[in-house]
Image (tube, rainbow, N blue to C red):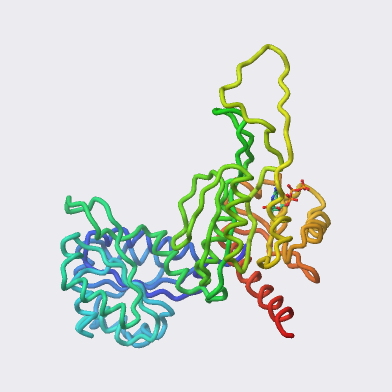
Length: 407
Ligand code: CTP
């Protein structure tokens, strides 16, 4: 298994007084699932919403609520705690606490820690929508942003107070993804990356089609990881049931030919193309405009071969750096290396299908192969694999560029 996105990261979680404090309990679990070590500091008002014992049990560490707790100070003083943190996250951050941060107050433990730490600070404001849109709060938030505090904007929706609007604390998974993204080294900064994902559907008639079992998850995870690594990402997706990763531009297509057109168009502006789509190799020769009726006799549907998108892109004059995928049931390395050479790719990510891995599950196992090397990335969660894959693509891309450019 590869590491979680926050493996061994020391996170100091500050919890302020607000109804969203109950969500912070789930957040501690999610942060620990992502590999982080968590210590919780609550403001006095936070303890009116959730008990410290809850956070102690979930974090596995003592919870601090006051500057003046002598035994806690003896165990780990507040300056030591500020130094321990690799990352400070205030969630939920109340309007009052944000105002106090702006003024550099140090009249309780949490505000003192924020002043005393050199770790990056993220805040997730959560409050009534009117309080959030108030000019004073907005001015405070932009001041914090200008000082380098990462403000994770609240979500919209119905609020505990009965109103509807912006001010809800984002869900714990969203906060974990945001923190993970903020810690990814920007290995693809300044580069434009095109990713294809999902299956293609080839229509037989208006109600039937030929498709495949690709869920699109691997390609979507790769697009998200590339975006987090600083790239400008375009995702060309076949029919899938997945949300668009934050910050990624998405083009939806259905058939292989539609995908080919979208990919070739986007390739002109791409430095790297990662072809994770499971493109249907064949389509129906002539799609019936009306629903086909049964005839009582065997039916023959004539299929013709689809364009090979990757091979076509490989033949373009100013082609991007090309990464293909190969799903194989047997002889994975041999077939994949053959594909790398035949399709003139820079790199291929091969996986064995038919063993509970691959298309539909959340895990995959990839073997990376390039001209003069290979690396087994092992079995892991698709998001974790995507991050490693993006790092390896970035370093191979640099090697290739450095070898090609000098003249
Ligand atoms: N691909 C493509 N266009 C196609 C088919 C596949 O761009 N019409 C891309 C896929 O996105 C993937 C790689 O090519 O990156 C897979 O190679 P391919 O040879 O198509 O795999 P298979 O269909 O499994 O090939 P074979 O049947 O020869 O094993």
